[in-house]
Amino acid sequence: MTENGGITECRKIAAMAEAYDVEVAPHCPLGPIALAACLQVDAVSYNAFIQEQSLGIHYNQGNDILDYISNKDVFKYADGFVSIPQGPSLGVEVDEAHVIERAKQGHRWRNPIWRHADGSFAEW
Image 1: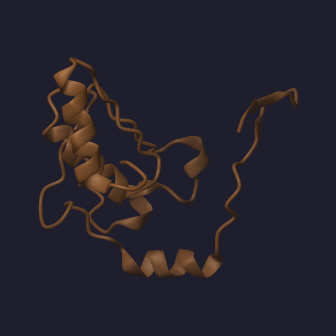
Image 2: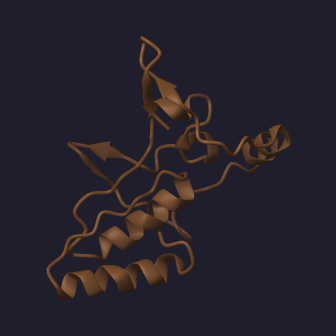
């Protein structure tokens, strides 16, 4: 999703790209709401090529996408594809109690630094 325009702006960008036969690959590491929004745009964008998501990725340990929603089966993956969430709004049901609990813990808004086993820099 785009920083300032949300779903509509992202859809406009995808449409402009489609006019020039350019594929789009929405970037979505943020959480279940962002993923659901991107999937809705993907569903109506013929040029959507691939959808990034961070489900089960190493930096989400104890803080994964599904931890924040109560309908954990909403993102159904099969054969490399994910179903488009159905239902009201974006199709995800936020687990408000979990969000409140995590908000009490606060945030450490820094990129973690990962290192290889030998201590050399891997990524940030």
